[in-house]
Amino acid sequence: MTKRCLLTFSIVMFAFVAAVPCQAISQTNRQADEVAIKEIVDHWQQAWNTYNASVLEGDYADDADWMNSFGVKNKGSAKILSFMAVALKSPEVAGRHTVWNEPRIRFVRPDVAIVYRDYQTVGQKTTAGKDMPQRNTHSTWVLSKELGKWRIVSQVISDDKPTS
Image (cartoon, rainbow, N blue to C red; front, side):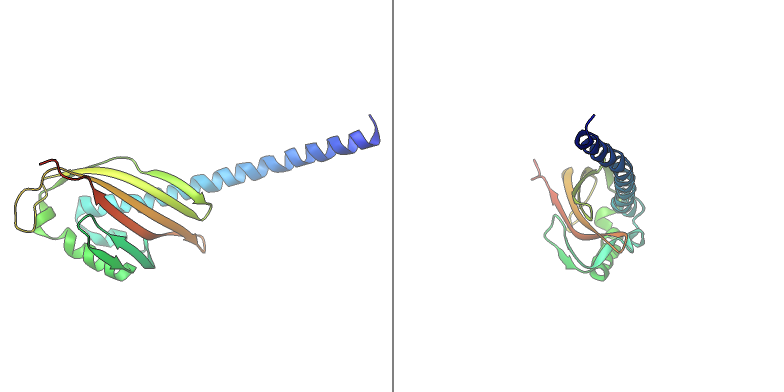
């Protein structure tokens, strides 16, 4: 083997060997990020299942944007949590039952993720006390990782148009 071929071979092998641990580390980081993100998204389900908004504390960025399927908008963690504390205690949601699909996580960048989750709710009432048809809801979260911590920076909740 010539010196040039040996040098090229050595460089290629070094690059291959050096890349393997980095890929393993980045895969481990991604798995840890997915676990952390899913935990935050699961807080939404826990809050609705227990009618307790305090589960959401620390999940939203201070300047987070939030909009529900009824067009209610809130800006900032404090306002979102305050609204949810009232909404979860309202008689309109007291008798409802929700079935939750698994969240789907998509990384836009290593520090930005979009999460989609669908769920179906029966037994919810209107503010006038009438039965609502089954709600087929879609929630989209945008999360950002800053200083090693994932936070929701935006959440939009939408429903399919009711069939009845």
